[in-house]
Length: 250
Figure: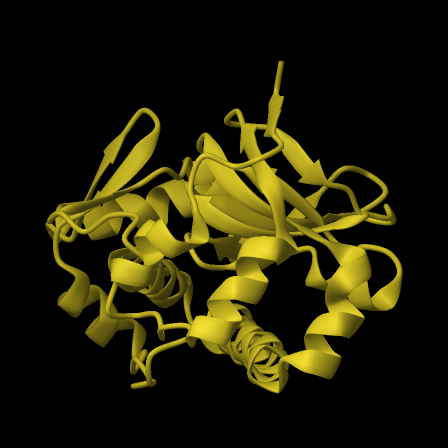
């Protein structure tokens, strides 16, 4: 079975492991009480499972508690464009919650654990908890900023700059969100995932990644990429990490 739903939830909001990470801002006591009632349970999902499908309607909103997933769109002939990657603390399903249906699909790259929230209580959140409502707006704006950088990368960076940017960005984000705090970081990507993110053929992607490996920046395994030198990747891509305050999460 790909999905396992836990109605009560094994991880209480007051004991949430994300709250111990410096990257995330703390809740007020009132916000924490609301979140404990807003959360209806948890969803455990196996690797390679589609959580949300483009065009679908969902009664729930999710926060990724652990694991790694990606958002993507498909053309009619099956070609895939990966839009972005989700890691702990990221909100999933907000688009479907506010716009009625999903405009992209979401698939798990690893086994993931999701906190499940009731879509029907979003209006209550906005009406009674303006701080959390602002947080949701901030999360949406940050996602837009990330997509701007990804679009710049696909449109203007060379193939090796695109790959360097993607791997540097994911490594930095994985460390901040607690997914991969050890060095060197190992990202659960295949070369096909990289190709579908960068808009390159698998052959071109393979040649590009071999160049980065020859420089000693990365090392590929069967089911992952070990990032051995994130700063040289960042410099090669010309990407400057934007400093930001502690980020909110739900």
